[in-house]
Image (cartoon, rainbow, N blue to C red; front, side):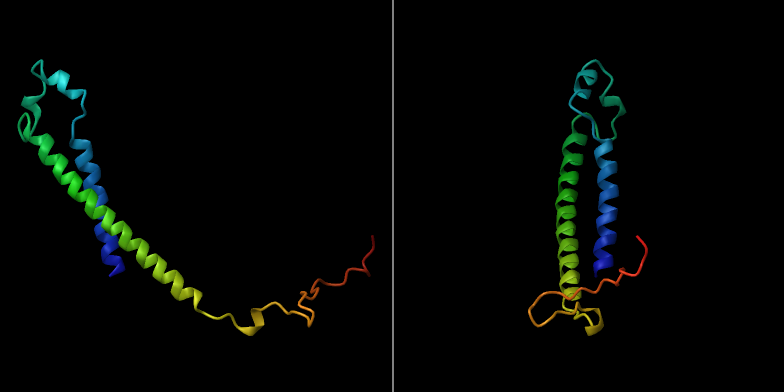
Length: 112
């Protein structure tokens, strides 16, 4: 399930990048008033803005949902790994007073 959500997430990201690059900015309207804008659009003079904007908004919503789903999966995996108990050989030895024992090697015999 996690891999499926990740695949959908990546596909939506690529499609959103393409849709955003297809949209014209606010500055493109000035050029269109002189006759350069409407003849080059696929959806007509005014149809592309509303169609592409709506599709982009829906894809952004689905992208947010897949992001939240992936965050949930990651949180669940971290909690599952935290429940694993370390073996006794990896624990730090503690003295009776509660202070950690000095496990450093004795270097007193080395020349100074």
